[in-house]
Image (cartoon, rainbow over all chains, first blue to last red; front, side, top):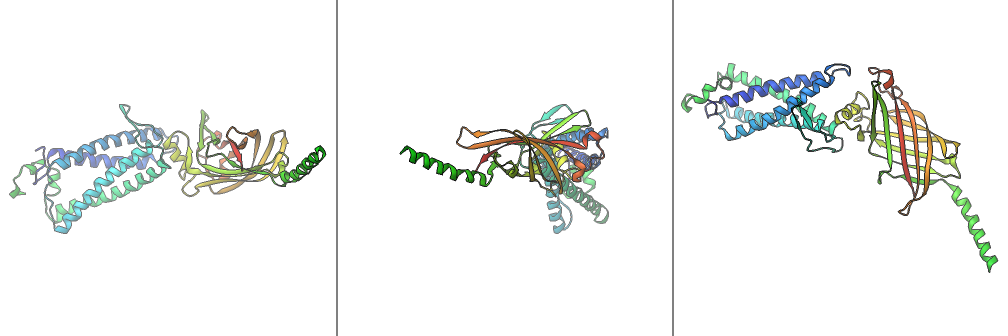
Length: 188
Length: 194
């Protein structure tokens, strides 16, 4: 139930997936909104503070999620050979973009050597700083990779709906219901 | 014998005088030894000041105490090297909200004239190009010292400051209070005589 099998996703993978999805979309919306705030807006400093804090927590969660992904079985992909290759490639790019967005975001805020405070609970130190033009370059990468991530995530959602409505696959349902991981191979 | 030596010295001295007046000595600004700073100071909402500096620039000047009118200076600043000790603020200042450094990566100053206003003091006039817009500015400058340095070179050092109105350079500060519409530019550097 908690663990993955070749037939379906366990509860842990399912929670990682949907919490990440909500957080990533929320961070994108927050980031979009907060960068357009006027200097006098009460959220001018508060917005980035929340954005950075949640981003760092998501980074830690994603690292744990990736470890879980590697030590656990991956449910069999459904669809034609071309579809499964495209899906596999798409998923790798999604992970790379998620990490790229978070790392570039971290590199903006730590470009002057100061760490990032996570909700005031603890501070993540700066590891890479004082590179030439670091904040601006990391900022550009952050924005464009976030945009690419949103577009690819949209495609990811459309593909899931296609599996569900057109192909009548269990692809989407098994990302919602951990019971699929308990089924024997023949039933999947 | 003595007469001959005195004569030779006089000839040599006479020959040297026009040489030293022929052109002002050229100095390279000592950015390598980092004895050169370009700083700015701008109000923060009227509460305090934000101080910052440009870390990368290069330039040279000509200066001759015997011919001050021939003084000149040329400086090129890498705008992206701006720092105010706060990476996110630096990124904002460099963005197209303010300096738009990706489109205008350099700022330059080229002097057009110099007027002595007293002992070791004068006003340098020149064209400042910032954010792609060129304005004539006047910067009062002071000679702080010159002479042989301990490492075998000859140095001269100056300081100067001027106030810039940011809207003159197409930088829109209208969202900010009046006190932030201007900034103070402070420059100090040593040059090594070439």
